[in-house]
Length: 392
Ligand SMILES: Cc1ncc(COP(=O)(O)O)c(C=O)c1O
Image (cartoon, rainbow, N blue to C red):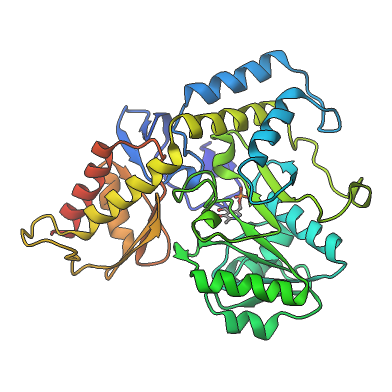
């Protein structure tokens, strides 16, 4: 029996079997190579089969026993210390888990606990995960409706419209949850005015601000956290995806004065949360990001690719000459979307034939989340293939 016959069937199947990878490239069983702009939906930032991460995980797996995070360990301490240097809080605390949706669940529970309130406000087009709490904050009705009733007291406001939040927020609101750049929703960037307005409204109403950096975090947008591009000040930050370099990990970071330890003890936990191979992987990822200047590289490469895609390569007058088939290119760093005037499905298939994997995000948009270690030569290949397909 095939894997698809044995699996739950929740994923739309792609028969391409990826058996190996290195850096920004993956290959199938026949040895056919692809530049990977799917990037494990944002996981593979430090590159596939990164030797540094593999060595750290192997060392942890070989030398450490399994114990839950009740028991302290030097590798977890070092990871959290290093991660806290990157958080937007004077003093940070963390809850470690295994995925993005778990990082969001913890954030929602902590927000309720800290405020004694229940109401959560999320943005239209938001994606925060598939477990019940995170799903309740996820916008797309087709994801939510089959599982209703969901968690009560969730409501939605329009992204980038302060007045829409103003209509909903009040003294019963525990938290506003927001992606600074909406990833699954099609790579939509929050405006500075909106983020400033959200913070002001949270302060005015005594609500917390949760920023979900599960997709945008770990250098993806040119800064360690996307919120740094705007100087945004949250109370809680959610991380996952790229933080483990491919090893599953989730982290909920919050300012240390959110509540005292006694209040939370025993109220939340995860058997695997903070396991040592995950912490070793996370620590190796943070080291790698620093040593390779991955944040700066993502910023520069993102600008480079945007310019390449913007300029029509066959038009010698060529400045900012959009293909007539491209409606918009948006994003920050290497979190990019290209919106076409034609259906994206055909473009995704043609790019795959040309040896480039991309994600469709909406009927006319593709999303590019390549490993941040991608080379200029590989970026050139992406823009050349797209030009060829669009016949420009
Ligand atoms: C912003 C955001 N939050 C949460 C999640 C959920 O993460 P996971 O699939 O690891 O549960 C995702 C996944 O795409 C995401 O993009």
